[in-house]
Length: 133
Image (cartoon, rainbow, N blue to C red; front, side, top):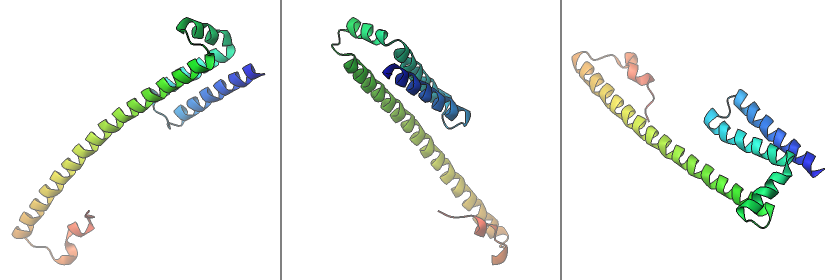
């Protein structure tokens, strides 16, 4: 009965991953990792003897300890990868914010120069529509 629950769980995980991919809620580079994990769950659920053999091969006493150790290693890897992605995103956001600030400064300089040449009536000032932050 436990074997069928494991197989059902693995199939459920794979179905959720595929559904998220189809709805574009999960990017392909992350889905690859989760698909590998889902397939590994399915293989271990179908052939539980593989886990026991791997446990003996690696010298681990209890198969559950191997699963926990692999899970912790996986979670550390995912956390490291996400931290790396976040660092890259923060750098890109900083760069874009600097470019926007430079662009705003250029626009304000040009607007002042244009006002010096030909002042607009207050009701026709296009800069009133631009939100300032």
